[in-house]
Image (cartoon, rainbow, N blue to C red; front, side, top):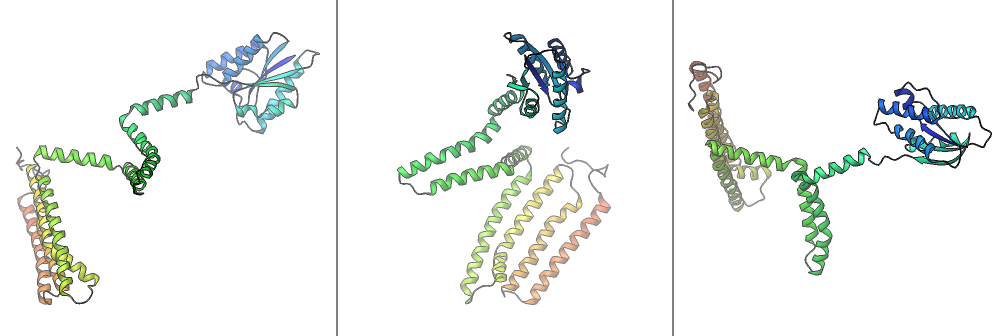
Amino acid sequence: MLLVVCVDLDDDVGRKTDVETPVVGRDAVEDAAVKLATADPEDSDVNVLFQGVHLADTITDQRVEVAAVTGNEKGDVRANRAVGDEVDEVLAGLATSEEVKALIVTDGAQDESVIPVIRSRVTVDGVRRVVVRQAQDLESMYYTLKQVMNDPETRGTILVPLGILLLIYPLAILADLLQLPGEVLGLSSAAIGFYVLGRGLGVGDKLDATVERVRSSLYAGRMTILSYVVAAALLGVGGITGVETLDTVRGRTAGELGVLQVLAALVYGAVQWFAAAGVTTSLGQITDEYIAGRLEWRYLNAPFYVVAMGMVLYGVSAYFLELVSLPFLAATLLSGTLLGVASTLAFAVAETHFGGDAEDDPDRVDPAN
């Protein structure tokens, strides 16, 4: 006699239906399968039960009995013991004098861990693992990959570095055949590194956002863009002037320059241009705020602060280069401080007497209108 044992180690049948286990008999197992499928259509143990029924219907050369045995929801050693107890109960209930052999039906490796328990009670002729043809994970993976390959952005993110990696070896062979320098591999590796680093830091998105802001600003006629361009040019000129000043100082100095002298030379040559760049950007932002109707009096402090800091840096750097005396340094420090304090007080008084924030002043007229 062949006993088809359907194993449900985590007791889905008992927990999800009102069926008492063990279940013995073809019709009883089929009824339990229907109830479990109704309660949870995605449970793989449904297929185990139906497979047991199918085997009972297809094996005709010997007497077949079907039984479903369960463990518990924890699936540990106690579950194996529960399965063993139910197998003993099934074997005790079989009214036959024939030798009983078992065919175990499971849905995976976890349920198959109970095979030694069953083998200790009855001879096992085989194990049948039920594999569903339409596996959800595999199907989902297929459609996910298909969707990824159809997305231009994701496709570029995955395929571009993969393509570069695959090109490294043929490039190395080509470089060897053409006797090109070994920098080919270095350049390829650097390209991959910069691409991955840019993707990781989101440089592409930031660059796209910056370009979009620049384009919007150009269409809106904002002065900030023009002031930034002019400021960049002034910064470049300032940097060049600073380096030229450093070379001049080195040429007229017999010994080696110290760190402070090097910094002082760079600042002395560049500070005027840098201050002009700061004033330019401040005026551009002030103009845009005025056009947008958001100008506040304290915003006008910015160019005066830039000039004040430029005066201080100019005096300090000139003093370290021994181009001016200590009284001149004191005068520039005092002048810069007084300029900053005077502008702060002046615009604070003006804001107090002539109007506050644009949002708080109901009589303020938007110049854009």
